[in-house]
Amino acid sequence: MALATKPPLQEQQRTIRRIWKTPGSKFNWVCLAISILAYGYLYKIFLDSLKSNPYAGPYTDPLRLYGIVSFVLVLLVASYTLRRRFVRILPGKVQNWLWLHTWFGILAILVAFMHENYLNIIHDLRFTQTRFTEGQAGTSALYALLLLVLTGMIGRLLDIWQARTIAKEANINGAGIVQVVEERLHEIEQAIERLSAGKSPSFKRYCSEALRSNTSLPAMLPVLAPNEIDDFERVHQVFMQRANLVHSLQRQKRAIFIIRAWRYVHIPVACLALVIISYHSLTELVKLLVHR
Image 1: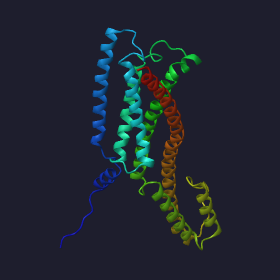
Image 2 (image 1 turned 90 degrees about the vertical axis):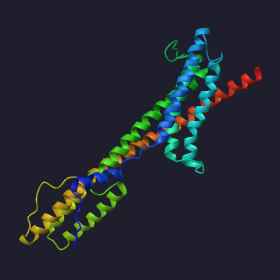
Image 3 (image 1 turned 180 degrees about the horizontal axis):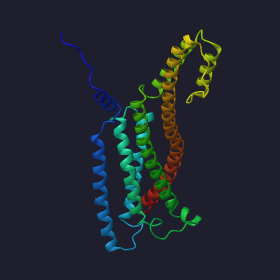
Image 4 (image 1 turned 120 degrees about the vertical axis):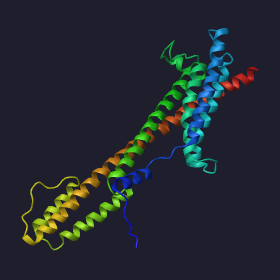
């Protein structure tokens, strides 16, 4: 009769790590390729326009059209929030929309730089009230978009760090993510209560102090009767396991708190930036249509 054998420990660990590995996405590379090709094409036109007009600006073609392109890209970037929170019937996975949100956001600010001919970025820097209000708040819209993209990039890096932190802790704590760890800690506390039931006051006092400290054990060991020594060794091992789980839980919650704090900053910045960019883009578009 064949005997069932467990796989080696290293194979088990590799299997667990695969569970927490974020799958790749081909759409990520599609969005990146589109962004690179689009930027290369627009940058070539930008250089050609500077040869014929070295002083080209946002009010001359084709740089004026770059502003429209950048505004359309911003709207596409904002559609990620609609897909994730409001209009979930839109096609495609949320992860794919996130890649579009990331790469098209970077492309939008690069196109906006060309739209301004890098004014207020690498030359003619003047931080005055007139500069921020002229051109239907064009400079304000540029910096708002730049701030939006920078906070978005920071958030993306934090998101990667958070996912890796939680995955690492889930792999090594023997339990899993936050919800599972909290359930495991509750089970451990119940086990401690059962082990301390009927024991001496010093045994119970030691357990109570250890439960209050969470991550450390009392320095003074209790004076125990001989029949309590075995149970004390068992409860001591349980407390060591509990301390490791509490440390892991704290690290996971810290990672979750940081990414949530970033969202509390990024979302208001995104809303304000979208208002400023929309005001500048729509007013300039109306002026263009009226002029023509």
